[in-house]
Amino acid sequence: MKYKKTVILLTIALIFLGGAGYFLFKHKAVDNAKPEVFNADTAMLAIFGTYNDQHKGVLLPEQTTQNWDVAQADTMATALFTATYTEAGRKMAVLALQRQQMFEGVVEESHATAAVISVYVFAFNGQQWVFEKGKKEVTEAGAHGNAPGGKLIRLGQDRYGLLFKGGDIHQGYTNDYAFVISLSDPKPAKVLELDMGESNSGTCSEDQKEQEESGLQACWERVAKLSFLQQNPADAYFVLQLTTTSNEKTSDQPDSSKVEKTGDKYFVRTANGYKLSRDPGLKSASIVSDELVNNAGETVFHKTGAASSAKKEGK
Image (cartoon, rainbow, N blue to C red; front, side, top):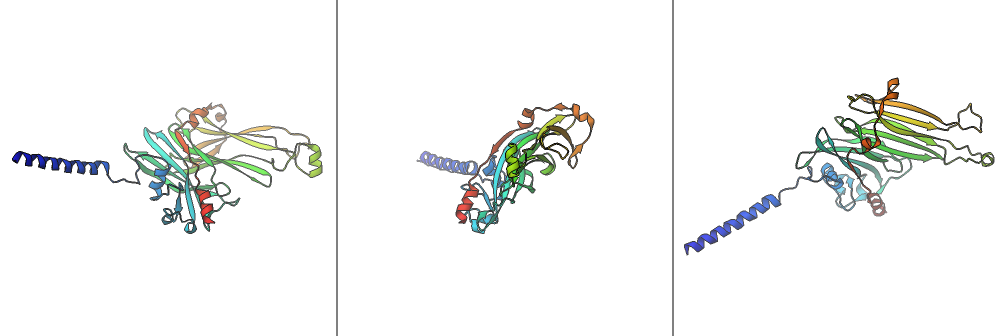
């Protein structure tokens, strides 16, 4: 009888210990601010403390997010892309998002409306992704309420950044631009803005008769290409080379002539960002391969239906 009682007590004890262990190890509290897996969903939740998984976004003020109360929101935040990379031997990750203005439950999409770009950097401590640095308003860019596209790039020897490229058209004239956001500074910062070209493609003609009859201009364009150079192996940052090719007619050219011209500009990194350099030695700097620049890590781009959902629910 005593033996049976001992067995029963041991069984109860084992059940209790097993339940306690399951509770402690399987049901440990989840820290949303320090996700174990990094992606757009977990990063957004870590930054804002709330997130609507169905709409893949956050409404501001934050209390409007869970019920997706667009009528009471003034801003919508959605991920543009996430990327992971290794810097100084540490596993790092970045979330780039856009903050779009809202008016009466609808995302503002007028031609002149840009979006605010926010950037947040996380570091992996072996178990969790921990927020390290970020900036709510790095820059404002884009048109029709949307930010331009961007991606992770390598800016130098163990230096990283984000390259955004965008463009617009107004009254038949196009303009293209790019800008660089550094991730290796104490805080994310826009360190360079570039004019990537323009054209009159929406208000021109190559037909001489049509030009005379309708008053259209002859077509012209100016196109820029961004390249990366290494002047000295010890330099932390690459030199940026902007090569511009243009067939735009100047005032001293005859109407029928179209001469293509090419020019280069060089930008070197300083403590305050990039500055234009006229150092003649840069012309002989070594070219850094596009593969090395662009394969800086793994980038995941995000297309969300949040904006369209906001439109539908705002009506």
